[in-house]
Amino acid sequence: MIKPKLPALAAGLKNKLIQQALERKLRQLDTERDGGATPLIRGVGATIPEDFYRFHLHPGYKQIRIIHDGAARLGLQDPFFKLHEGNATDQTTIGGQTYINYASYNYLGMSGDPVVTQAAKAAIDRYGTSVSASRLVSGERPVHRELEMALARLYEVDDAVTFVSGHATNVSTIGYLFGPRDLVLHDEFIHNSVLQGIQLAGAQRLPFPHNDWRALDRLLEEHRKTFERVLIVLEGIYSMDGDYPDLPRFVEIKRRHRAFLMVDEAHSLGVLGAHGRGIREHFGLAGTDVDIWMGTLSKTLAGCGGYIAGESALVEHLKFLAPGFLYSVGMPPSVAAASLAALKHMLTVPQRVATLQARGRFFLEQARAAGVDTGSSQGLAVVPAILRSSIKATQLSSQLFERGINVQPIVYPAVPEKSARLRFFISCLHSEAQIEQTIEALAALT
Ligand code: PMP
Image (cartoon, rainbow, N blue to C red; front, side, top):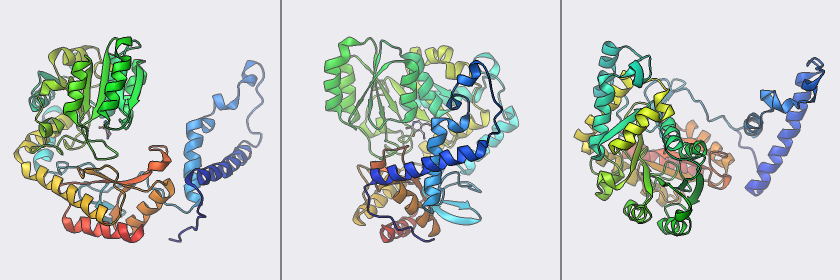
């Protein structure tokens, strides 16, 4: 591929120029596309601007086109929606070629593990492929409760409830439990699903600087009294940065200010702690130190969906009243069975957790030694290579792809332009040789 020569413009200015050029092009395309084809509308309808009834003029769509057309003009390969032709582990097959794969969060290799696959197949044989109703009415199957009780045991709390989507778990839980008289404080790097939940709740929202418990404490000193319920939301391992909070500090603060604490364990389950029980095991905390344990089934647990674990009053509440549970179908038994099998299996193979932690550390050390900016990553399943330019991240991802390495760029608007990056997900299946090959390629290209 020919590398386009870009003048050394500041990223902001460069993006602005691309944006202006593309907006001109879009205006021209819009004129050409319509070519007077739209019939003349008379009456009230004639006064409604086209922007309000045409999808191609929706601001989101325009932004996507600007980004895609800009990438195409610069000769960049589209890094999205790559077709993986088999199970994605440390390797994956795309277009008939095998790649070393860092784009999947199959941290403990449970997706594709025969134990997990067999459990899913047996559940299909017994229950079919769908429960065909909300759990509350006629969608309940034994495997749902078995999975939830196993999750409750994992956190040593009363109970757990599973939702059909991890994203919807956060949206529906926060959206249902909190309201306009409440405050949600969250780490500035919190996942989008939490932000969406806060928006749905209509609660006030205050971000605090990444992992900064002192800043959180100050915010609570100032604002706690103004609100009724206050929720603090953290991640067990941050999904973009691969670091984790000093959880005992946050527990002490939430107790002092009489707030609820919620921890999203999406990337921490299977990764932190000697047995992969997550950040709780890492710090040796009690399950009851955190009010709302949230996690996803889509990473270590080789399924799809999310869970909330905590006291009975919380779980019962959600099962009867959270719209994302109540008005949504029960999880397919095959998915619940796969995640249950993965969870049970995880607890019997601590060596996989140890290998994952060792490979993550190895990746981080090698990357740092090669001068890669890995930010605040602790080498726990997620290691970014921060490039500070969406164009550079996309180019580098495509150059690595040409060398047999599949890693996804994370670009604006998913992250601010100044933190555009490649994000490497490490699995316990990666070998040191694969990691060395990757870092060599990365160093040669940067
Ligand atoms: N929380 C975090 C921290 C995540 O990274 C994600 C997405 N991977 C979710 C929630 C949503 O989970 P899911 O993709 O399983 O819907």
